[in-house]
Length: 625
Image 1 (tube, helix red, strand yellow):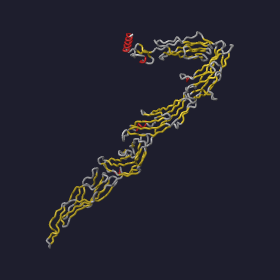
Image 2: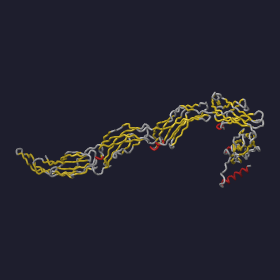
Image 3: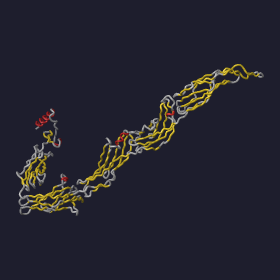
Image 4: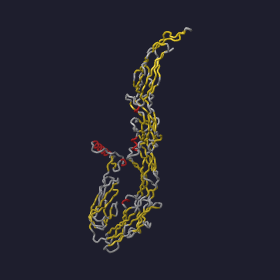
């Protein structure tokens, strides 16, 4: 045996190496193999199906009971055998169905109530559950002479009830009776009494389930038995067929069927409430101040109760479904009489908001109750996550701010703090860049106060004073958004401007002065009371007295009165770095016995492009003791 095992394993390995078959699965027992395989010589070998064989009488007449056999069926595997059989009969070309006595035994007794052809099919299954190929035998049935007939009672429609401890389920008619009566009356040409035999045929929905207990009283041979059908809390409803075979003295059989429908009322769900559940959400940042994190919403369904009007045992459960939310979570916990749920969406930016609140997002919870007879009731709730839009908590409807000239950036610039916003869900907020004003388009949220809007107004300096381009009224709208909605806040922003001015109204020059001989002598005291003075013409360079408090570039022109004073340049552009130096020249004074002084006025005209000013400053130089 050991040598055979080695040879079998070696052969299987060689075939696998050549690519002809997959490598065999080694085994020590059947437990190491698949359910449809056996362990033979330490190798799992696929189970061969059994073979179905039907034995039958040579000919057939209607209304006669015949027996088909299956004892010749076999299984080719060593140690295996046929474990079960399944018979079925269908009319091929016949106006009536056959009447089988059993459906899964080794022998099958059948009455063909009419002439025609019928297919008898057999499928056998081996000990591993592997079925055979169907074996089908077609039989031709010839009509018997003067067959008997049987008349059955009318079809019945009943309800049912489950009650008691232990729970019993029975049919129930309108008078609350738990039994029902059948009836059959046979007739035919043969003399003598008929023999009756009743049997029940389960509804298709009960096949494979725990079979009900069916009792015929006084017995199944009565032409009018009283029937009780009972289950221990299992299914009982459906279309039942009660088949009666009436046999006359010749042994011919008439077949009749009385139909009884046992109804079922579905369970009822109470307390479901509205089919829509709306829940708010909350944003939790991944770190303090972060704009990434998670959005979550929590809730519960209403408390529900379920009852079955027939008293059937029930199975009830909550289930959930969701779509359109990417890979994010919709979690549900079945609490028996209600369900709790949570929605969690990872948030990396506004686009992720679509996974929380549509469009295209669907979330639902269903409560389904099913009775043992297949009746069901469902309550369904749509779960909708809501959003509270951002709102304005501190509006700024009107505001006036100054501007300043940014020399480094060569621009006119003003900033203003606008409205403050809040989001009750804690959602990250973003500010629209556009404000409706092209000059004041630089909007942002304040780094110090994230929910406060700031705006920056700016105009480039093109080489010509143009403070008018930024000064004045600007209608600015700050719009803050979460991932779904916006909140606008309008502000009338006035940007101020200060006119240029003179920083000094007089400028003193230091002249060249020379003192000469005495021109006023006191003869008594022999003292010189005054000397002659000569003042030379004076020229000096010094800063312009023109000032703009906003730092704006200013266009300046200078004009002098008289001939004693001159100024250069006569006009200039005080640009981003200020004014250039002025050259001032005063005339001299000839020899005189008194103090000498030279002076003149400079008329100055200034404009920053928005506001203009005119002013005079005096230039003087003097010589004195």
